[in-house]
Length: 252
Image 1: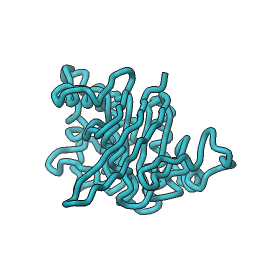
Image 2: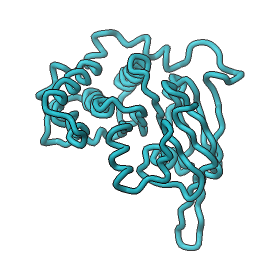
Image 3: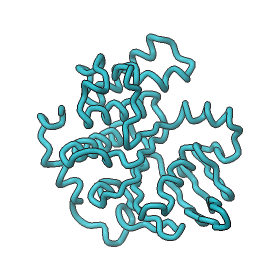
């Protein structure tokens, strides 16, 4: 059974007398450990779909099931608990709290879970090590580069050992070198943690790193590349870019 089942999902917004339908009867199955990328023009519903999977919003019709739980039927209180235990979110603008250290920012999701301080410390140290920032644990966001801030954001997203991680334009605010480093990190974490990863991006090269690539057009979801796609060939542009990043650069 797929980890995520999106079944006939439609989402509409109303602006005055106008009805906008960014998602129309979208159906998609996502397997455990898959890495999916999603592209499309601005306003086509990419972030809307991401937020529905993250249970931040609800569809007007259809259902979304994650690991056997139909999240579209949960109450707001149950959704909050489900999200804290099962989902990590990586933001484009990092969304770090400026007065908290890297360690404290990463700790925030764990404060919502019933675990003690010792277990929190263990998980935070594992997450810091995973993103190569153990030496930055006591640094504040203002003391880090944009790439390092995004690494903290990624550590925060994985620290609770979620089943699903969603990333909304994770390289959108970064320079090309930092973008390549973050993409390489996401690919490595996906492989090591067997986490299911969904990424929205405007960058075609970044999208190619995913196992499967999709595009939203006029409310419909269309696969454009990756596993099971007829034109899937060779090494992607993103993988070539990542391969040119030296170990020294990865610590930047």
